[in-house]
Image 1 (tube, rainbow, N blue to C red):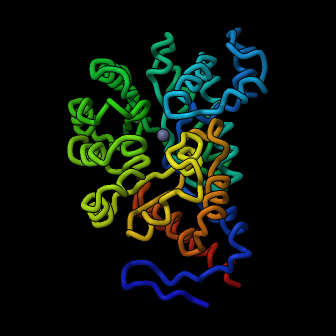
Image 2 (image 1 turned 135 degrees about the vertical axis):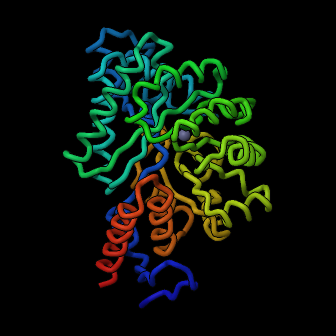
Length: 356
Ligand SMILES: [Zn+2]
């Protein structure tokens, strides 16, 4: 049975029976566009790196650290997130962290990962930019060889820090720009609107970097407008608050701006305390280029497949939505046109295989 699509570029995609949906979600190829690599640090690896580097942690063991992952909002998470990152000191630490993520991503059929990193979290502790980028870049190169994942790096500025600090970070990164595809903006959103970084992002665009920004996670739709109009963001990270602004919804749909939505993160940080109440279905129905991502998977209870499986189970999304979400991510990636087409062909093949 087939599902005739509206007259646009999308092919006719077979609808997959509901009982096969979990298997389809696990098997279909995916792009992950919103993953903070420091947020993939599992408690076990935090303790292993702490032991290797002689770092004292404010938690006696793995279980007590994991128990502290009961967040009430973005800030309560960030406090623990920065404590966890304190164990990262050497090039090999950054490599090991990223490689652990790529191993999990490969198991979830991620074929393309554009990963965020927060250099200021490390440079503020005296770790050199080169150490951070060397380790992460080496892991990205090996991700292709070891796991078949096309991996690239997006440098994020911490928005709770100053414009001056962001400029200094960009300056420190300039020798390594050939290993970075773009820049982003993350950390505490409320009170730190995109306008604060207008000049930094202008310079990044002049340097030929792609631009993305977190906006509309906890912050108002105005922050999404500013990310688009002031920073010229090509993707909006989260963006779920757009639902409160009909004109913005129309624009996001019309311009096909990708939204990198992170359902389990939204649940854990109480943006949508119940996954069943998440607005992802409404965003999709409004024609927005929504994608599913894991954000900080070690802290928020799951990687890509957990996000897909739990979201679909809670909201009742069907196989058409699965196809659209995965396709949106491939189209919204910064891969070249031929590579995007290869990903989409792979997605189509998976759906055809499931239809038989
Ligand atoms: Zn994020």
